[in-house]
Each structure stands twice: as C-alpha cells, then as structure tokens.
Length: 301
Length: 292
Image 1 (cartoon, each protein chain N blue to C red):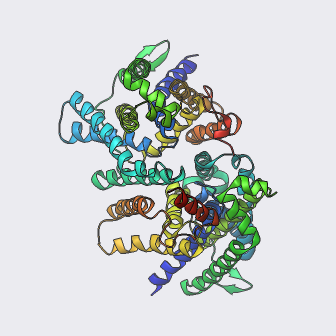
Image 2 (cartoon, rainbow over the protein chains, first blue to last red):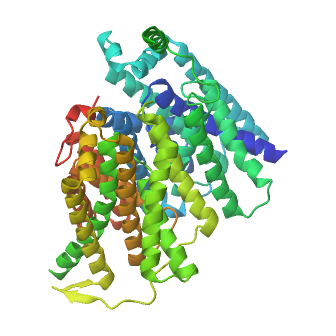
C-alpha cells in the first residue's frame, strides 16, 4: 500500500511540474527546454534552508520564489528570441544551472548531493509517514491546480493564449507582450520550484543527476501527451508518464534494460503522437483564429 | 609557452570535430529552417557502429569505418523521411519535438543493445610526437587532416557540382527552387545524407581519440550547434569557423574558469551570441528571423 502512496506522491509532484510547464509552453507558447532547472533550484534552495533549520512552509515558499525570480531574470534577455532559438537558449541555461549544482561544492556538495533533508514540520505537526506526506502533497497539488486553472480561464490567461496564437495581434491590441510573457514565465518557474521543494523533502536526498535535460524531456512529454494548453491533459500526461515505468517493471527485466526500454517507449510514443495526433490525447479546443482559417480554406476549395 | 601551444593544438583538434558536426546542423537548417536535435546522436551511432564492427565482429578497420559512415548517412535520410518530412508544413516546433524524440530513441536503442558502459576502441597507448613543445598523437593528426580534407571537398561540392548548386538554391528559397525544376525532396535527402555522414566521421574520430558512451551525442550536438550559431546558421563557412572558435573558447577558457564548467562554455557562448548577434559571424539571415 505504501508503494501505491509513493507512486501517487510522485504523480502529484510531477503533475505540478507538468502543469507549470503547460503554462509556459502550452498556454503562452514559449518553448522552455530548461524547465527542470527551476525544479532543481526550488529543491536545492528549500533543502539548504531546511538544513539550516528554517520552518518547512517558509522553505517551500522561498524555494518557489527563488525559482520564479531566476526564471524572471533569465527571461529578460532570452524571451526576445523566437521559438526554436528560445528552446535551445533555455536548454543551454538549464544545463548551465545544473553544472552550477555540480560545481559549487561549498554550497551544494556537488555530485555527492545533499543527504538528510528533514521531513516537513508544519506548526508542530510532524509529517513523517508516507500517508501524511501524501495528504500534504495532495493539498498543495490541488491548490496549484486550482490557481493555474483559474488563471487559464481569467482575462489574464486569455491574453497569454492570445500571445500564443498571434503575438502581433496581441501587441496591436495594446498588450505589453513581453511583460505578459515574463509574468507567465515567473509563475511557471514558481510552481516548478514548489514542486522541487516537495520532491526534495520527500526523497530527503538530492543530487545534480536528478535535474538533467532528460527530465525536462519527460515533463515535455507529459504536456504534449495530454494536449498542449490543457490542464487536465497535463495531469493525465503525468499519470501516463509516471505509470509506464511502473508497468515496465512488471516485466521483471534488469534495471538498466528497464531504463532504456522506458526511454524507447516514450520516444516512440512522442513521435507517433506528433505525427498522428499533434493535439495530444485531450487536445485543446480550436481557437477562433484557427476556425476562421478553416473556413477560409474551405472557401478557397 | 609550451602550455599555450598545447592548448592551441587541443583547440584545433576539438574545433575541427565540432566543425564537422556543425556543418550538418547548418546545412539542414539552411534548407529546412529547423534544428535537427538528433544530429549529435547520429555521430554517436556512427561511433558505435564502428565499435561493433571493429571490436565485436572483428572487421578490418577501413571497411568498418566506411560501413559505419554509409549506414549513418542512410539512417539520417530515413529519419528525415519518417519523422520530419510529414511535419514540414505544420509548424517549426513540431519537428523540433520529434527531433528530440528521435535523439532519445537513438540513445535508448544503443543503451538496449550495448548497455550504458563506456567503451573504448583504441588499443594500447600511442606515442605522442613533439611539435613545437606540444604533444600530438598520430590520431590527432588524422583528425585535423580528415576534417580539413572533408571541408575542402564539401566546399568544392557545394560550389561546383549540380546537386551542390541545387542545395544552395533550395537553401535560398525552397519554393522558387522547386519552380525552376529542382527536385526539393531529393535535395533534402542528400543534405541529410551528407550532414549525417560528416557527423558519423566526427563521432568515429572522437571514438578513436577518447571513448564512447550512449550520451556522448548530446554534448557533441549542443557544442556543434553553438558552433553553427556562432558562425552564422545556414552558412557552411561559418560552421567551420564557429567550430574552431568554440574549440578555442573551451580550451583556453579553462585558464580562467574552473574545469568543471568546461562543458558550459559552449552554452554560454551560444546564449550570448543568440542575444547579441543572432545572425552570427557570417550572418546570412536577417536578425528578425531570430527575434520576436
């Protein structure tokens, strides 16, 4: 039973990550390939503060805030770049942040990692068992989902969606596109940092190998799988990506083979999805612009 | 002084390898306007095919290398047909995502077949030659010579042969090229074939010089991509120069920064170039193509 709880906790943490990336990639259309770095920043910041004896809620908040702020400052120069160049720039910066985790021995202990991250302690409520951690994670996950979902449907979210569909149109309507993008990036990184903090306090050990580009790709798969721009889809994607390795484990193959098989399954899944169902499993509703374009196409025919 | 010359030699060796891989990026980008994320992994596959033929199946060295280069060229063409061609008209991000998936697929395939262990091709230690106070091994001389030779050949090919001219025309404007009767699909296939073959050569050279592991493609790829951007993406000359520049920056950079950050030098240069002069040294694309 505690195994199942463990899976559900991981599912919640990764859902938060995929929701936060969905906000950046799916809603606003900024292709961020360094997302896992912000998860890492949240994890390291929160773990280091907790090891200094700060209370958990403060660590959680500061970890998320630091991730958001760094995301914001990285966004100021990079968001001037277009689609695939933004992707490569964020990928590079993400790897750079990881190499900081790896090399700043005095702070992060480098490849040796940070052991013994304390379990949360909220107002003298000790969260030691897996069950109680599950409840904590579920609550935070649910709140995150509500906030992001609310944001998607708010006028603010509609501006972001507008930027994704047609930047120039949004600009012509007087929206400060750059500022909106920065805010979206800040929020996405903020929630990624929060997920990172939850991860660090749950696993109680972090090292730079948990924050590689491959992890970013897994999160990207969660978002694409469920359907870019769709929050339920992002959660569904996380559920699938979390459960496939567990199912592969049932085959009882040796560890490394399972790992390689997991990668292969995901890569084939991703290629097939983009080729045959680019909207993802749930897809996103077609925007008005796209519907107009369809009508246009039909008229031309 | 001898340290300086040693770093110079190391820079040229690293740079010529990056340049070989960068050419493939830049050629594909020139024609299709998309970043072939799996390009570095093709270098890795080339290295592994050579390893399997040479060490596990006992083939002689020259046939092993030729078979490896040829099969990677075919693999590159095949990947384009399956994963990129159907998305040519869709958006620029869709092929980027499938390219990431292809990269992951190639890595996992090698992992499944040969495992994650680092493999070595070279046998015994080779005697280094002294050259102006710097050590250089015969293999390193082969690396530099091969790269220079291939780049000259490619330059002549693009400049004087019919298919080479067709490639340049397609890169300028695909629609107009097809209007004047160039078979664009054929050109794209040859671009992928040549680019992948060059990547395979680079991968094999690395395998002989150092070692092989399934994730080596990622770092080769990102550094070569940085080289392509520095030189001016879409420009073959730029890719050659960019490769050397990245090689220099990386090797001389460790004078000033801790060695642990060596792999990050290319990333930082990449980001800086994208921000300051995204069209690169031989910028042939207008700045607007990069910025919003």
